[in-house]
Image 1 (spheres, helix red, strand yellow):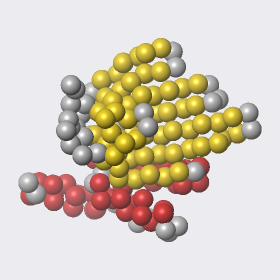
Image 2 (spheres, one colour; image 1 turned 180 degrees about the horizontal axis):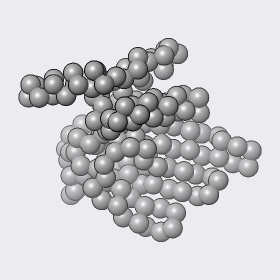
Image 3 (cartoon, helix red, strand yellow; image 1 turned 45 degrees about the vertical axis):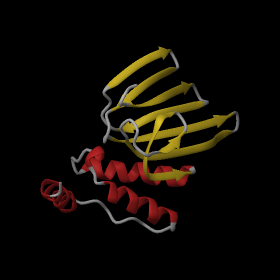
Image 4 (cartoon, one colour; image 1 turned 90 degrees about the vertical axis):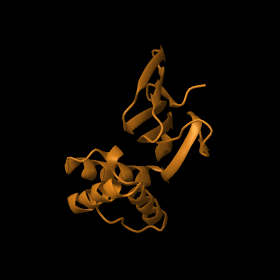
Length: 154
C-alpha cells in the first residue's frame, strides 16, 4: 500500500476540468488523453480545483485546499482524492472560488509558494468566506513569523 495521496485529474473540453492549482507532486501518471493521476507525499499542501459545465454554462465550481495524509491516518473523504486528505478550505460556487484564486495569486505575488502558507491561514480564509467577510491579507511578515514558529515547534 502506497503512503501517497493520489488525485485523479480529468479534462473534457468545455465540460469538466479538475486540476491542481498549487502543490508539489511526486508522481504523475497519464491514463489517457483526458485523465491522469498525480500523487502527493504525506504532509504536502495542495489546492484542488473542480469545474463542470453544460451547454448553458458553468454548473459547478469548487476549490479545496488540502493536506495529504499518510497511510492509516485520519482524513476526510474528497471526490477524486484517494485515500482522502485533511481539509483546510472549501469554497463552492464561482464567486467564492474566484476569491480564493485571487487570494492564492496575492500570496504568490509576494514570491511565496502557496503550498508553504500555514494551514491556519487557509482555515482563516475558509471561515471568513463562509461568514461573507473579507479575509486578512497574507503578508511577508506573517510568513516570516510562521517560518520562525516552525523552527522552534517540534
